[in-house]
Image 1 (tube, rainbow, N blue to C red):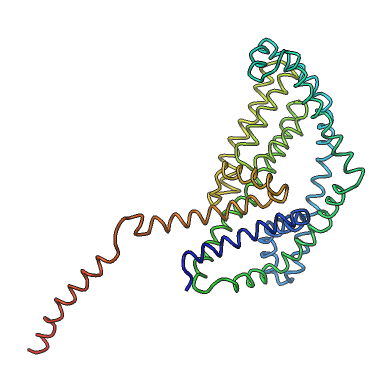
Image 2 (image 1 turned 90 degrees about the vertical axis):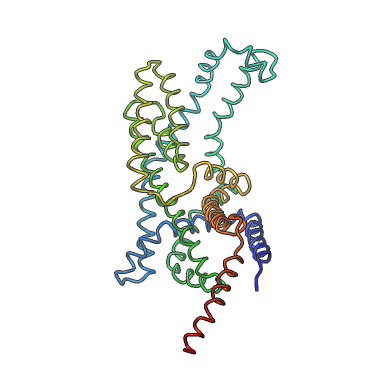
Length: 378
């Protein structure tokens, strides 16, 4: 019989083996992780279309083809605009740094003491150095992709292999689920199914819901800021929407950046108020319309937990780690909740002994036994 210690050792070994596998093969795992994410995202649609008796393989092919068309069309429409605004922003960044220097120059003496610099010119040179770094980001990225090399090969492998992985996973989803169910230990099968159901509820709410919210917000912010006349409005709005995958983070950063750009652009508080109002309205719509409708109350992943998981996954395993961060965070969250529930239901937490009630029942049974015997004798 498996003891608690053996369970802990077994699952600790499985967790370490998983981390080791990701660490060793993280370079080649990206298409597989992306393909699994796409399959998980689209599987409910495949299930619904498969009920029309057209075959699961054909249903998966139709859904995947439609998804690819939508994604390619979306990027074809947005990437040129975003790239153009990114280049413009990089070219204007030194000018913004000059504006920032003009604002902080009266306080440069206090700042240089805090930062350990010798004089104001050192602080100005530091700002210029970071501005120069930001100026070359887009150009270096485009140059590395155009020149080929490992980055281009990785991009090509993602474009080619991700749809293949997604198709076969959607096609074989039911068989994979049955195979995994067959590996579950029989004595804990019901408990494991409950935990998997809770994990799926959290993941489906986050992946399908929160990503939908982020895309809608990105398009809405980009359109609203561009119509309002903000420079780099599409870039700032779309970036703020994507960062809204972590609730509050995208809108907060987008608000700060857009308000700063609006002030540098116009220098009028009325224009700044209009730009700020766009994000405040967006936050209201997100909290009262989009999140309740698209996400619901099943997510249960705290924004700080998601933020920590993304940072930890990215620092350990790069892009693959960030893609795996949310599923791993959901699994850990469910297991911690399950462990806490078991702990609070235990005699150790309640401080009560389970042996006392059994003794009381035994004594009552012994006292009643002679009475029943006497009635039978009479």
